[in-house]
Amino acid sequence: MATALPEPLARAYAACTTLARTHYENFPVASLLLPPAMRPHVAAVYAFARMADDMADEGDDPPSVRQERLHGWRHRLHEAAASLRHEDAPPGRADLVLMAAGHTIRTLDLPLALFDDLLSAFGQDTTTTRYTSWQDLLDYCRRSANPIGRLVLNVAGHRDGRLDPLSDALCTALQLTNFWQDFGRDWRGGRLYMPREVHEACGASEADLAEGRMTPAWGRAVAACVETTRQFFDRSRGIRDQIRGRLGLELRLTWLGGRRILDRVERARMDLLHSRPRLGAADLPPLLWRALVWPGVG
Image (cartoon, rainbow, N blue to C red; front, top):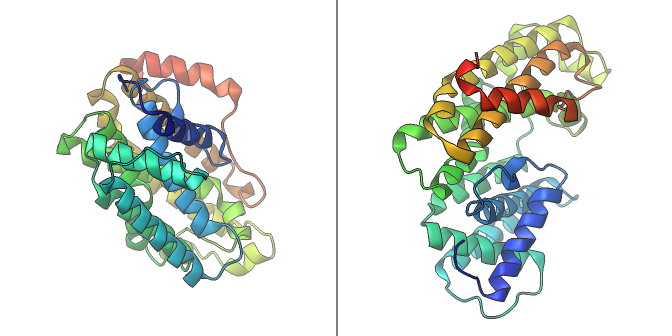
C-alpha cells in the first residue's frame, strides 16, 4: 500500500496481520517473503477466513446456530465490500477484520464468489463428518482451499486464467496433506476426511480406530491417499516456474514444504493416530536452499 491509510483502516489491517501471525492454525499468509504491498491484503483475506472457520469449528452451539452465524458473517462482508465508510473506529476485532477485508475487496476488485465458496465449505463443516468418495472430498477442497490460492493470485495482480488450475491443484494438495497430517486429531474430534471408498477398499474398519489401533489396512489406506495427494502436487508443478519474484519464492517454499510433510506422513502412517508429522526449524535451511536453486529441483 503506497499511500498512507486513514488511522482506523490502518488499525484494521494491523489487527488482521496480528491474527494471521498468531493464530494456532497459522500458515504463511503473512510471510515476510511476500512483497510488502501484498501482505496487508493477504492478511485481511486470511483473517476473514480464519474467523469464519472458527465460527464453524469452535464452541458447543448446534449446527443451525453456527450456520446462522456464518450467514451473518457473509452478509456483513458483502456490506463491507460495498461500503466506502471507514471514518469511525470500530470497537471489536470482527469489525476491524471486516473493514480491512471490505477495503481489500474494493481496492483490488476481488471476486466475492470466492469468499462465498469459503463460507459454504465452513458451513458444511458444521454437519459433515464423513466423505463417501474422492468426488465429495475434492468438491469440499474446491471450496475450502482453492479460493485462497486464487485470491492470493488476484492480490498479486495475476489474472491469467491459465494459472487457476495450477493454483487449485496446489491448494488441494496442501489441504489433503493437512487432512492426513491431522488424521489422529480429526478422528478424536469426530471427523474422518479419508473417503469411505478408499478405506473400505483397503479393508479398514472405523472400529479399529475407535479402539486406538492403526491396522495394516489403515496403513494401506493412508498410503493410497498419499499417492493421490502426490498427484495433485505433480499437477501443480508449473505454478512454481510461472511466477517470479518474492511470491514465486514463497510458492516454491510452500510446494517443497508441503511435499516434505506428505513424505513424513507416508513414513509415519502407522502412527498417525498418536503423532502429527510436522516440519521443524531444521527443515527451513534445506527448503530455502532448494527454493533458491529451483531449476535443480526434482
